[in-house]
Image (cartoon, rainbow, N blue to C red; front, side, top):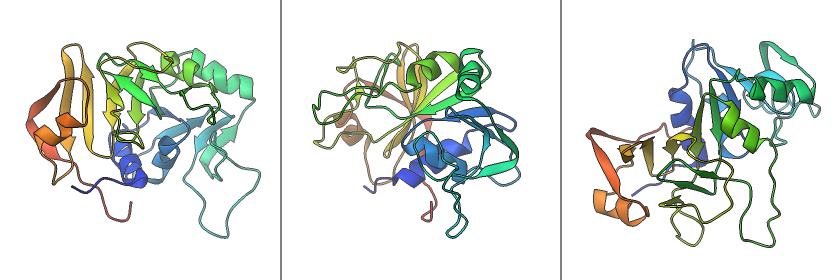
Length: 224
């Protein structure tokens, strides 16, 4: 079993973004997605710190220290992009103008509950940021995260054990092991990495999984 890297998870999520869609990139793995949109497909990326038309990470030597994304990473501005007041960036979110929000998470439940702002680690301070606005303001929420925690604990849960950001909002989960749809009748695995079996993936996942009849191998470019 070969787990996907953070960049490969971001690549896989970027492939599902539709032409002309407005997409917010949350802190963590999602901020990498702007690097991997297929050529000749226009996706307008939104950053809650006041950017519409966020571009990919800058090439070495072309960094602008005054241009960062919501995760404080150096960023670029796409052709036609622009800046706005922080309050206006949140008006876009709360006004329902985002098609998709790509968010990181600590846990996701089988019902699509999202926990991504606080942990039980006293050395890791809580950080709400714009997560609660994004979780309910975007038309669709998709999560990018590692399949299990640092100690091997499942992060796809029957019920979240951490404080919730929002209930029943997540529609798709991209992990370093699988692509999983959250459906009214449970979790449906669409893709999983090569070298892992159905039983092994289930052993790393708390709720019962179902597997698509056309289950695919989850593969990503090595350079991603």
